[in-house]
Image 1 (cartoon, rainbow, N blue to C red):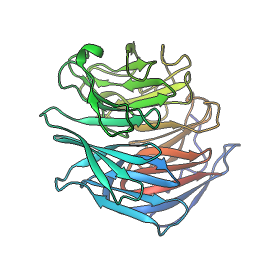
Image 2 (image 1 turned 120 degrees about the vertical axis):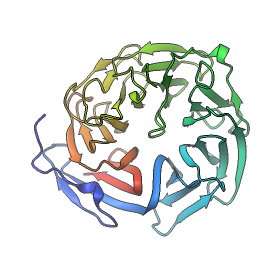
Image 3 (image 1 turned 90 degrees about the vertical axis):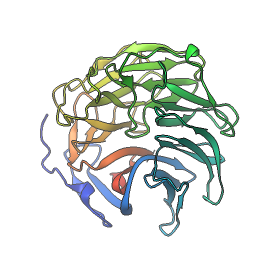
Image 4 (image 1 turned 90 degrees about the horizontal axis):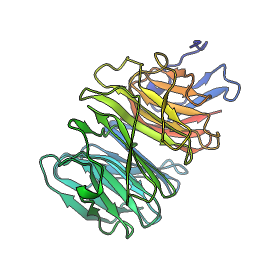
Length: 347
């Protein structure tokens, strides 16, 4: 990998803007704008109604308006010091779901003025990792196994009620196989299709073509076999082009067998940029309107960028404290992590 002439420590900036010149023809500079700072940890964000909604630790969730800097909201939903690592929205509400026991899923109004506890679950093994909506009525949340399958709950009525899927209707997991609540990207949905990724002793992709009614299991070449190895994040540009990434959380600089791509909807996966580029990654996302060519990754190695479907990567930042990233348009992303939420503009 050729080194850039300027490798910026961009994302450590607080309450300021900075620019970075690069050798990329398509982007000449990057602007960083700190939207929120404080003592919090955030691994779950969603763009909805011109606002970024976020779930965080200390049982808190909030929003930041992208059109009015003074328009911000914050609420605490529980007296227990839990952490919301799953967030999703439909046209009417925002939903947040915590990790740990007991699990609590809240339906929250867009202005944060109303909230309703719509699902609870108590079990020593309960631990939810991710949540997405297919449409305004149907959504899915993924949890680590309690028995020998993923703990999956689904709503078909706009989030008013959620029902657990019986293990008999789900693929069986291997011993030591689970999921990682790294960035709310264990589930990817495109139209009716769904992909779920696992890690640990096995690292596989679970695919449904019918919004969670039936499932098939697909093997991957991602590193696996240890408790903290496997796929931590996934994204699909469309129904065919996708990427999975992760690695070994306990060996964050290891960059072998930690990123793979598909061009056939996940039926097969191919390692890319093996032994180069970033190590452990907590989140990877496609740029909108890029034909599946442009990608960004955040994690222990910093922020990396690819223009060739993951074949090669350029490092734009060494900030290891960003955990999740989402695009709001074809050149603007919101990233969140330890003590901050920032806007990244690619110019």
